[in-house]
Length: 274
Image 1 (cartoon, rainbow, N blue to C red):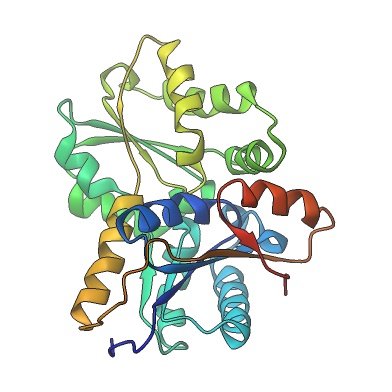
Image 2: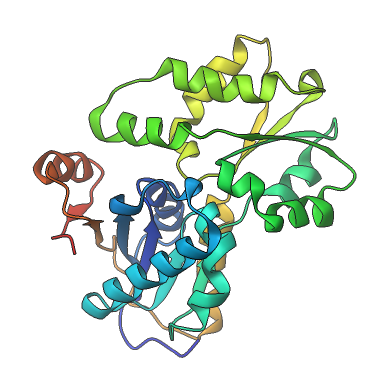
């Protein structure tokens, strides 16, 4: 990565609000960075796409965004997307690309019981990359995999409209609870970037089973990786008190005014979509 002669701008790309869970950790660690969130609402949900069409779609969308909004680094803030698109994307863009993968390694290191829950989209669960992560880093553990097809959509509705969905949170936990060795599970990996936004709701449902677990996601690790790449570049940044946070909603949603208000409450300014 070449030194950046200006305040670095990081593009955080996802199909929806999952970008915000990753961006929040980047902003917490590196508050002076400028962040641009690109939410591909027209492609949501990524977890139900086939791998090759998804890779082609995401590459096209990201290249379009970078034409109008040049950035110095790209974070693909989606597990389903990262497992499908990273090699192709890195060959097409001239900036560093950071992907998100399920936090299986730290979960395996942390678990005392050796029984880990992996809550993700069906797409992430089915990817060979996920199976390889388990084989490489959690072969000594029992991993309970649960692919929930509707949870990310429920998170989107909860975030944008404030509509709580207890049935969706309960169903997600049931996907884990119905599997063998659930009673021994002491750690859960939230392997979709949408899911940390409702961690409290999921934890509440889990208490109905008399269980408390450690919840692990990839947000902090991604923030540290962004910081590492900036440090390795030798970049000298003018430390601002707070960098800008802006968002693009790809697909020109009809309700952009109400969505802008939701983002504003989080300190994020909505730009015109593409």
